[in-house]
Image 1 (cartoon, one colour):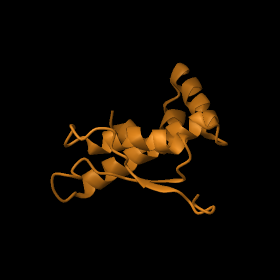
Image 2 (cartoon, one colour):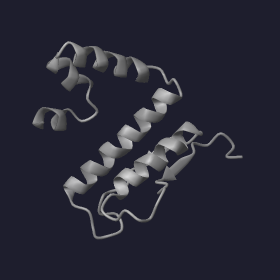
Image 3 (cartoon, rainbow, N blue to C red):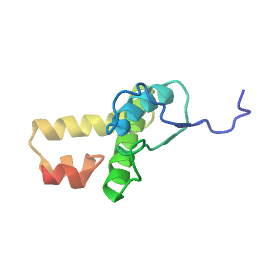
Image 4 (cartoon, one colour):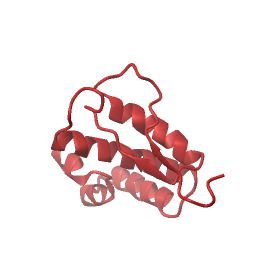
Length: 113
């Protein structure tokens, strides 16, 4: 169908009723798309349908897309994804903060909290 070209999606938005949260809605749709074969996810910002994004909007969109891609990798048993979550689970149980920060998809946010 796509002649072995990478399949790329923007979103897809699973609902249009959450303005300001389009990055979350897109991450949900992106996970589903990646589970079913999408090779590349384009990030969507929280401001996507409201205004031009600022740097924080872009960062939040990229992180949401990374979470979506990682979630799909776990489901699709992509090498390293489950191992990362297993290492994180062990670190949480052992209160190993350094390992948790190292394994976090957004270490900066993890350190803030």
